[in-house]
Image (cartoon, rainbow, N blue to C red; front, top):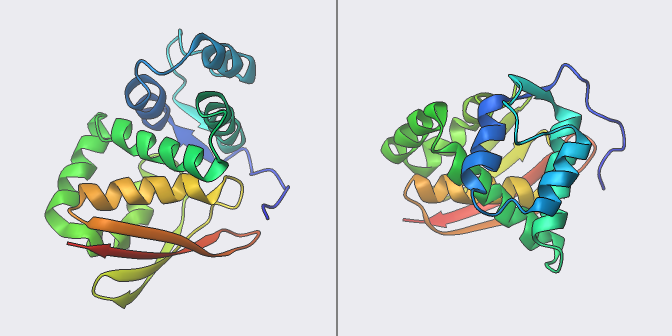
Length: 188
């Protein structure tokens, strides 16, 4: 499963990602319980956001949020829903609106090819690799071994839908201490 080695603290998640998820994507869904748990973990949503947060803190915020908002759901569904909410909210930030416009114009295949750039707009450590398998199928690798793979799958699902894909199917193909490989198939 996931590597227990914590990420380096120079790995940062930027303010617009935190804002996109908690202030926009989860607007009206952040319960008092979640707000208290996040505050205890170092994210006080009642105060101005920091310019960036360490990756380890962000990963902790994601885990707390999935556990709190979807306590009775299987982790696959909770993390997938959270990933979709992140992209929905991020698409409403200044940086996210620009990326969403580009995704609509370039379509699903090229959106996947640009994912390192897209993810890097929200964090400084993300790397991706895409191998096209067919016109509407690809293998996608991302250096995220710490979070549930369904979280990234939810982000990818929402991004591909935003880019015009229909009937998106994302499955975990392999996972190791460096990251996760997904097989992605979509229709138009």
